[in-house]
Image (cartoon, rainbow, N blue to C red; front, top):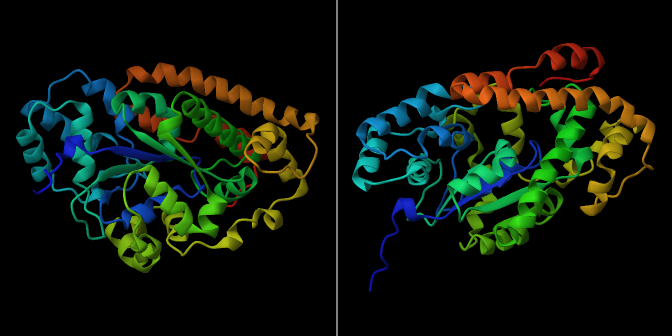
Length: 357
């Protein structure tokens, strides 16, 4: 007897989260090469459109509104739905034919419409990779009650050393180190309530033995491991061209993740960071590092906490403003959230040390 084909809206969903420059893009590409997995490039539309459509039946005029929003409302340098190469007429047709969909089902159809560089057979799993979703885990859990969360974790010294060289990082070591701490707290809080739905994978272990780590991760996701996952780097040129990475400022970041995993990257921070920079990172993350098996090189320097005061104050102001901007349309909200803050353009420019790639 033939197995009944699973409807798109019934496919399971998983997301990859973690701090930027922790290996999320590399992990996404491993799964992009899997023949049964659909995992598009970054485009964080779930949390921004959920409040707009969560209680609406997706009749034709609502579908038109939804497609217009994902095409034209969310516009950012690093996010563009055009990189998904979706046939929007076909998407609309599939949504109409499915009938009686709610927001979660519509999102799944959108993810399934992504055109991958890699050949796919019948899909078994839908996935998304997005560091920003680290801060929206509870909302995503409401949208997809059965979602599985894969959090990739990297030594904060290595992560901060990497992100400070890119446009989406801060000029300040303190701001980047505090962001690592906040991301880990969000993941730990979610994991505590959702043990069976959360999988923590370490960047170092993934780079050192990708086959072992991916085999275990595929078992968690209830899909078979495929050897082709390990050869994603052979498709590097096609990936950069087809997904439009060559035309955006994020290109150097993406290009570095298209290489075969390189174990030399694991301890690169030891040569790149000064003693004071290492102490700054370790001071605010001392306990979190030890809990996760990352051994601090220095004793905790409480005097260095004083350097975090401006960043803490800025964080409180940002939190307050984030509640204020919720009343704005998604496009305005995204523009405000991801525009360089006055703090970054003044204090960060004066006291931060950063080489932008």
